[in-house]
Structure formats: C-alpha cells, structure tokens
Image (cartoon, rainbow, N blue to C red; front, side, top):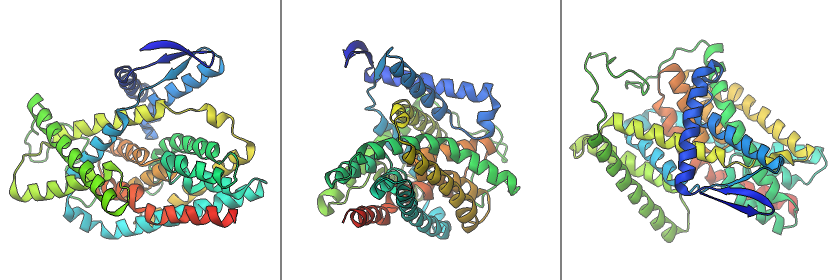
Amino acid sequence: MSFEIVEGLLTLKLSLVGTLAVAVLLLIYGNWIRKIFPFFTRFCIPAPVIGGFSFSLLAWLFKELDIMAFNLDTTLQMPLMIAFFTTVGLGGSLGLIKKGGRLLLVYLVGCWVLAIMQNVVGAATAMLTGIHPVLGVMAGAVSLEGGMGAASAFGPTAEQMGVQGAFVVAVASATYGLISGGLLGGPVAKWLIEKNRLEIKTDERETPLYEEVITQETGKERSLVTSNSMLYMMGLLLVIMVLGELIAGYIKTATGFVLPGYITAMFVAVVFRNINDSVKFVKVHDESVNLIADVSLGLFLSMAMMSLKIWELASLALPLIIILVVQTIFILAYSIYFMFPLLGRDYDAAVICAGLVGHGLGATPNAIANMNAVSERYGVVSRKAFLIVPLCGAVLIDLVGIPNIVWFINYFIK
C-alpha cells in the first residue's frame, strides 16, 4: 500500500493483499447490513453488492471532492470466479442436466431472443432520441448481455468505424448493468414467488444448500468442515481449474474459439463428479465445497463491485440514460411476463429469472449472486438454475449474441 500523486490527485495504491483485505471487510460489512436492515434480506440483495457498491460510491464521492482516488489490484478476481464455477460443476450431475433439458433449451432460446431484442430496443430508442443507432447497440446486447468484456471489445471497433464515443458509452452502460443486475434480480424473484404463492421446493431430491448441520431428515449429523477436508477439496478444485485452463488453451489453439476458463473448469468438474460417483475415487466433502463456493463468490463480486467507476455513469448524456431505463424496463417485463411462464411458473422458474436479470443486465457472477441470495432467503437451492444459467449466459448465448451484435453494427454503419 502506498500513496502517490496521479493527475494532481492523491491516490491510494492498494496491493493485491490490500485489495483482498478491503474486499473481505466489505463482504463482512454487507452481511452486517443485511442483518441490521431486514429490507436487504427481504428483497434478496446480495451482501457483496451492498459492500462493494458502498465502496464504489465512496470512491466516486472522494473523486468528485478531489480528496483521494483508489488504485486497486484485482488480480485475484478471475481465480476466485473460476474457483466458484468449479464448485458449481462439482455439485452437478448428468442426470440432473438431462432432467432439466427442456428448461435449458427454453432458457437458451430466451437468452438469444433477449440479445436480439436488446439491440432492437437500444437502436430504436437511440434513433428516437436523436443519437447514432450504433450507440444504442453499445447500450444494448454489447454491454448488457455481453458485459464488460464485449463492451471493451466492440466499443473500440465501433469507434474505428466512425461512431464517436462508442467505447465510453459501452463501458458506462456495462457499469450500469453490473449495478442494476445485482440489485434487481433478487427482488424480481421475490415478487414472482410471493405474487404467485409458489411452493418453495424443487423436484430435485437433494438437500438444500442453506440448512443447519443437524437438521437432516435422517437424524444424522453432516460431517463437519475440518482443515483436512478443506485442504483436500482446495487441492481437488485447483487441479480441476488447471485442467480446465489447459483444455481452454487447446480449444483456442485448435479452433480459434475462445472459451472462458471458468466454463471449461465447470465442465471438467461436472465430468469428474459423475465419474467419481461411480468409481468412488475421491470422497467429495460437500460441506467444504459449499464453504469454498460461498467465500470465492462473495470475494469475487465484492472486488468487481468495489472497482466500478460510477463517475462514468454520472457523465452520461440524457439520451443514453433514457436508453438504459428503457432497457431495464424491457428486461424486467421480459423476465416476468414472458420467460417465467415459459419456464414453468414454479420456484425453479423464479430463481432462473433472478439469474436472467443478473446476466441479462450485468454478468454471469451477478446472476449467481442473485440466485444465491434467493436460495438463502427461502432455504432451498434450485440446482437446475445453477447449471442452466451459467451454461447459457456465459457461453451458449454467444452462438447468437456475437453474430447478432456484428450484424447490427454493420447494418447501421453501412
């Protein structure tokens, strides 16, 4: 940790350890706020969003008052995200994926339609407000379904094609999406569950993730987490993460197709879990895996939220604000009145809709955090949601999402 002057402003430069320490404190703060103010728990607002967003607001205030700026080392963000998705894979089974086959197909098609409609809504609203329609595309599937990665990729490309301000619009819109996606997904699921008086259950005969250690129906205590169980499970997760990284590198070399490292790690974990269930090669300690999942997701999202540059939103022009408001209203209506009925109008569907709002506006980790918050609030985990949403929202959406973005950009620039 050190202080330096950057562009005339005192800047606190946090090391990797310093950034991690702040992220942990913000996560603790977020959990404390949820306990003190039941509003956040009632509406399923994730603790990492509360803590991380509070820090980003403070950083914005300090910057505006010329007090101080922050330089964060977020190197651990990606490993933490990969670790979480690996734990998701270890909790999955091929039988469950087959059981959720129809839901997966419905959700995937729904994601494709959403990506196309976000560009239609963005471009149409942009033209109505008098700005270039490609800027509407930047505030559409590029930054919302696509997230910060697509915004950073397509923004400069659009500027090279003559659309000024495309990169700033894309990044600012992605920032907005991360915030709104984390804040709105949980309340949507809560509203759906309570309005439709849904029974809080899934058709998966699995033990809920959030439960007391000694409340098994069998009357047996679950095995306690120990240092050895944590060590073994961390070793297993790290080996799977390395294998996923190697597979992703091989696919990129052989085909040129880039798969996110966390997706290949999740696939390796699913394959391992199903083979291991048959041969009993390794004893998977689910309690330790769940603990690692909670910590890794919480820290990742805290880092992601605390590093947001909210001042980029404050400088948005009125037309772009209008576009983002319209996009938000559209995805909420799309999730509630279109996807929820198609997905079955049950608890699983409500949890999946929380995920859809999360990655439809922000990113896949937002979706996971939303679904975690809903699961914690109601005490039952939808394993279908935790497999379907990451798989579709992080990888399969791109089969239509990326060509759709390219087509819209070229159509309005030609």
